[in-house]
Image (cartoon, rainbow, N blue to C red; front, side):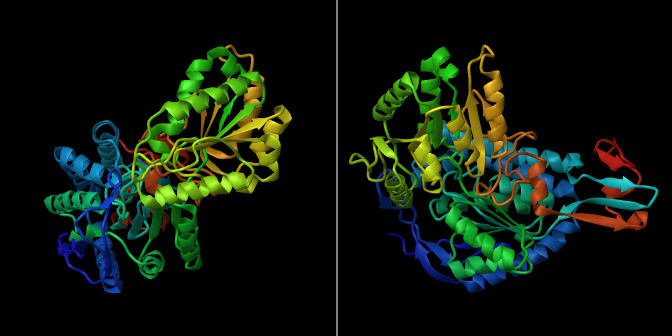
Length: 524
């Protein structure tokens, strides 16, 4: 083991800041700790980062948006150049497939969303510039201040606090960033931060535009969330931790944007099974087990009407779950929490059909788990049976009739996404419309004949939803330009002289291309 402790990126330089301890990442494919020691940063490092973020934000506000766009593009280019090394490091820390998952999907998505953020900066319409010439009132979205970003364990690139959607959106808004990495993949975070910091230097942004802490204790986490200099916070992770952070932020009136997990219910109407049974079975089982179920959009809850087709579908799902190979979970904590959640669901009355225990063949893995319960039981013990089992576990709810199905759907908590499968000949359209209306109130993204896994980075995307899937139903964590506005405030300028206004609000359109709402009309 190396005795050297990795430095943190604070106040514009890599340095050995104060620490309360150290930790090591885990190789989940072997169940062994990786050699590099990473610091658990202490109060001095946190205080220094907050001071530097405040100064960097003030300096960023003086620079044209073009500079931030150039940074984001330079960062995306640098990720592209070293993607093979990044994928190798991330695979070692997460166990995720290097070529198909990391190189093939996640890194391309990451650089694409960073470039989309750069394009939004240049296009400028994201700020929703609004002008009332009669009253000389003008408003637009401006950055709130330094952003604290806390990333999850399951996406080492696309949701990393140093490179993910929150990072791209916060930088696009004009915020300096304090990134709190996830302890599951600190070396990946460090490598990304090295490329980002090089891009900061290359494009002349303030040196403390990005700062990185790998891990902190809860007291320092509270400081990061509640400090007066912080404009906003974004967190992706468990409901327990997210709600704790929310309570801290709420006490001081701090905006905090949470993504807390979701069951992403899928309703399979009888006609979909009668029409294309094998296709639906393959699609649903594949989506449920994709990536060992370690997606926030994993379909953890299926609804069917009881009957012969439903019984045949359950038998087919059991066969798929038992014949599909398992792979490593992200960490021992994920494995332990998955086992505990399955036990809690079974204690609430869910019947185990297959799986239910960790595997013997890999150090950190779990058997694909399928459970079922009646619609009546789901209604009686809804809160307990709506517990997320993060990983490769699925609960199927069998409802006796349409009335029970509709009542069960009406009892759902807020979700990120939900899907509805029906017969394509239109015979179930009226029923599908009723089901869709129930789901529409409870999900941020509603799908038809398509599974919830996979989130396209698009301006039309909504990766959000009602509480408790997120902390706020008005925003999306994916998609530009909407995701940028989370890190902003609506700023009004009343009778301000032309030369003192932001260029977006002056009489002359600064680009001739950005859309502005002028006297009630959208115009360029």
